[in-house]
Image 1 (spheres, rainbow, N blue to C red):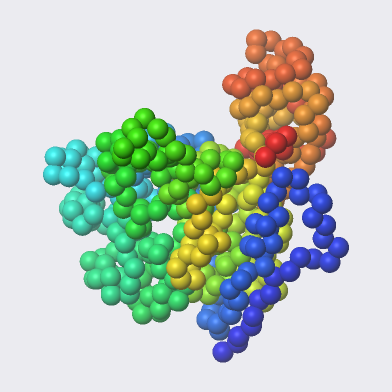
Image 2: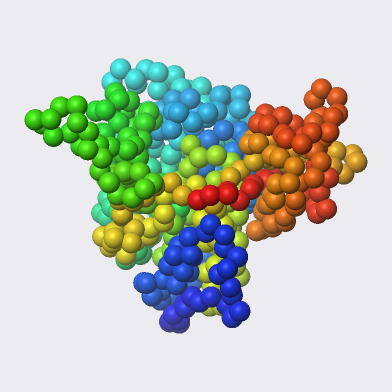
Length: 451
């Protein structure tokens, strides 16, 4: 057995002065782990990098930025009913795109339907049965039974909603023919290792990045109680992230703020999960898939997270003993909207550094546009998503952590006709001459002028 401890450090000559609005605490804390990592001598196998696809555009972004597999949902029964999701026709097109590139696609059917919903669910399962999904993601035993009757050949992956938190549960599901289990986010790294070892033949999946529900594996009732929208039916309104005030019983109408800091009162919600620095330990644990949360998030989130984890995972697989957590990876993750980062339950009960109550949204950059195509004259066709003005300093990002910068001079508005403009507004299409190579689906963003 070969054992090697991995140390994380900032490279010689590294300067923190260029980080702008990046939270340096995040960079240092997540690239210098408090929990030492020891690698076992287990053979290193390549886990799948599984990305969210909330609609067709997000799916294309996931493919462009290196996903090995994607998960998507229809317009019902998939726990993210407020996402754009996919029609039957779009599912077929999505599967063609994925399979053409050797990428797997999984359909989410992981809600908990009531009796009165079962007829509609059965009809839905029959309508999607001809589509060549690589697996369905399920949670409820009744749904599993229906799928078995309609598509007996379909591979089934068990959702985190099923709360699989120990090896005996994993064995139970294996006997029922489940092919993969997404382990509960409350499991520690040691729990994960033990379970993977104890249940040979079963594939296991672990979340590595994204939002964390404050309830046990996402089984929350707050949304149902406050808004009538059931999180377990895909209708969560995220009330845990709202601002709250206290009212004393004898003083109706007097609202006392729950003061945490100047950014707001966020008394329920967790920081976001980020296990980037612990990729070596997760790979060594034997998990088959590293899953990124976020079907409700925008394309900027999908692109940024994927390009970081893709490079980090590939570099680890190429050189496990020489792998280092690069500061620029955490810098990239801090540029997009997040609520601070935590390692969750990976090392036991969350400590104050993770599950804190000041987890307001943070970001240093804003997404402003996406490259749609390249014109015959070499200019880039840009779909504008946020206002762009002459003089703006923009960053253009692509796969493999590719990034270039440009100060905007003139812009050409393409519809109707062509006209030079100084300001481009959302939903307009412009042409830009760029001094560097770009590809369709590369993104443009701008550093915010205030935190």
